[in-house]
Length: 293
Image (cartoon, rainbow, N blue to C red; front, side, top):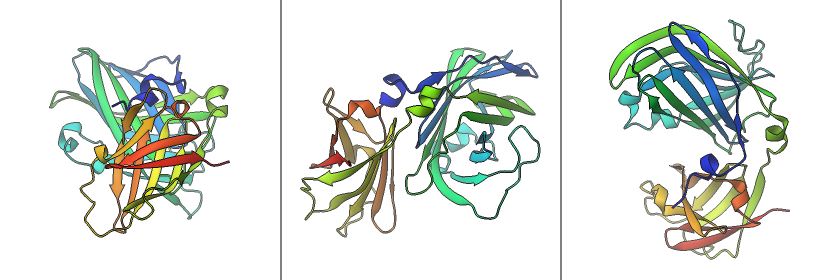
């Protein structure tokens, strides 16, 4: 079982040489970014003058073309949401803004907005008692818009709430705005491939893969279920992808089942572990995907 390829074994993470910004004894900087068509991962360093274990905040992310990539207007409390899935299925609006994130007035340029869903996750790790590393991940849904391609990303944090366990240590209402200049190699190497199901052993059975896309760090599948039993209880272990490089299987990062029995599933991967074919399993049934030419 190996579902950590996108974090541990790839060349898509850009390390940032960023200086701390400091407000009210809190120093923050972004250490690294991973960005492709379906995933953004930020690793953020928080340093305070008292012990802390978490740092939550409002978040606003845009690019240099003023496209709104992500916006969260509430401070999500980790302890209040730890058993809920709402923070993994927030709606993200993809739209163009007439002002950059650095300006105080951010408004819609036009009325037409293309919406896409994304799963948002955040977790913190203590390096020292007063120093944490926070990882924020956004996962886009391939049924709608992909994350825009850009040379710069702007990250705004506001209303930062510091906690030590369940206890609130400090709330800092000011804004911190970080500019990330993406290296050309991370922009130029950003690719997504389409795959089609072949040798379909499931054609007369329950499941068929009707769409598959592989980005640098995400594999997304859209699967049609044709029978009548309730499949809302499908878990992540039910849909496995096998990488041919070392013959280990990868468990899904998330799974959604719609009312019309369409399954959307995504995997954290490194695209280079796959060849032109991908082997998968749904329960005990195997399927094969082949890269489109």
